[in-house]
Amino acid sequence: MHFKLFTSLRSKQRTSLSEYVSFSYLASLDLFLNAHEQEDYENCVNSELVSRPNPWVSDFVRTHAAFKNWDTTEMSEVEGLTASLVQNECADKAQCDGCSIAIARIYKTYEVYLNNLFAETFKVHSEAMFNKLHEANLTLETAK
Image 1 (cartoon, one colour):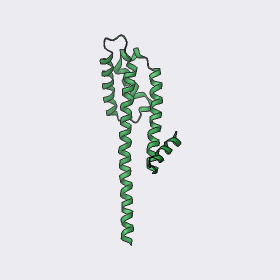
Image 2 (cartoon, one colour; image 1 turned 90 degrees about the vertical axis):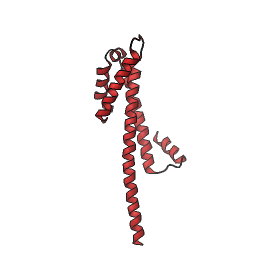
Image 3 (cartoon, rainbow, N blue to C red; image 1 turned 120 degrees about the vertical axis):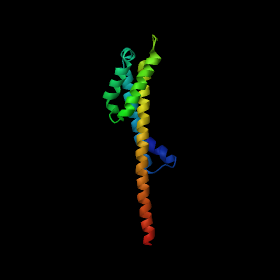
Image 4 (cartoon, rainbow, N blue to C red; image 1 turned 180 degrees about the vertical axis):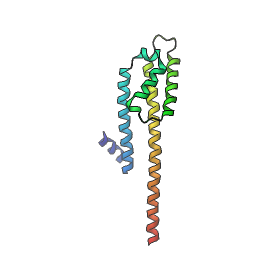
């Protein structure tokens, strides 16, 4: 997977190590989350979720190993919104796939959270690296 990724990046004139690391991280993260999401959907018992959406969603997000670094405030918001969505979508319906509704929403929200966290962290480190390089260039120029 990484060989194809790096070959593709190189063909698009993206050859910096930081870009390789970033894209590698994002690709690995995507695979990690997709594998968990698939397994969670396969193990979800729809009747349990639909009959008790609030405790099911809360337990799912708070005990899942993949969500350990999720900000608790954002996690709480997702819990409430997801449980409400399942209640609204599945109310008075004999057939409703609450599992796909809840799990897809939780994972998508978490992925956005992680991507924003990564982007902010990368931005901070890139700015710091640029400032250090700029300082070094100024030092070299004044030394001439």
